[in-house]
Image (cartoon, rainbow, N blue to C red; front, side, top):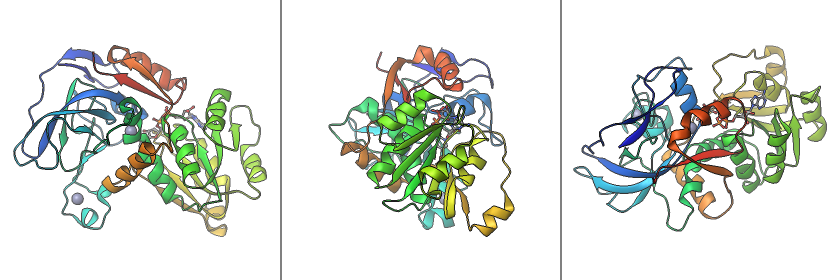
Length: 340
Ligand code: NAD
Ligand code: ZN
Ligand code: ZN
């Protein structure tokens, strides 16, 4: 089969001919139809994070496809089912985190397109216990971005503790952020969006943000957030791939507010101790979502409450897609058409 392979960090991916994997016990082999391209795939290919994947590997954790074979002991999936892969490829099921509904914190988890080969190939393996099932009747290309971007922002918005009718700040209106605007609206929140271009502001407003700020041209973003929300956002979700966005989001919070950090730029940021303490702020990380969060996120999509903005591209263009992503030039998500 053809696959885009990372052979060396920061080198262009190679479109190689590789063997079709064989499903082991508890696994299924899936013919990939579509796969979203997440900024995490780019971080993976660059070796950006402290815990690195081992080249050669195949990225991709927003794959949607059809089950073509199952391994021993598989009962949850059958040939012909439509399923996806996910960042949480599987987890141990036994540790204190798995036992308490926090499987995304499992120290023994594996990750799609990172520690296990992912969906940037014509076939992929999934763990039959963890693979998300895609309901009948949905646009399968549009379903792909839900599998990471969708669930991540849906879970992050829950973690922001913003209630219906309150303001949430969404910083970064890319693949994740443009879906965050829509999930937030569907969850009854009022949205103020921040990115660094007028195109992203337009995308946020199209998807239901009430206010959109361009941090590249706006002289005092924090003051504008406070002004527009009558005293600060009740919560914030930061998906931006730039460390400058993080203190800005903290600064935009109302007293007692919570910021959920989701974006993973490799840099650090300084948290102001005095204001965090005196204003009673909460800063927390949020990593993808559990299988239950993912099923809920897919259900919002299947009911038409969120509609990913996406462009279909061929696998051969993966290196161009990464270049455009780095430059912030992608509108919503790129979904690769793997059917050829
Ligand atoms: P993307 O490239 O589609 O979007 C990133 C957006 O950030 C772009 O619109 C860009 O213009 C914007 N941005 C850049 N600088 C900014 C600034 N200073 N202020 C505001 N916005 C700014 O990326 P994506 O696929 O949406 O992923 C976003 C990040 O989230 C990545 O770091 C990715 O690895 C991470 N991620 C985390 C999780 C998780 O579970 N925590 C899951 C998926 C992705
Ligand atoms: Zn992702
Ligand atoms: Zn576990």
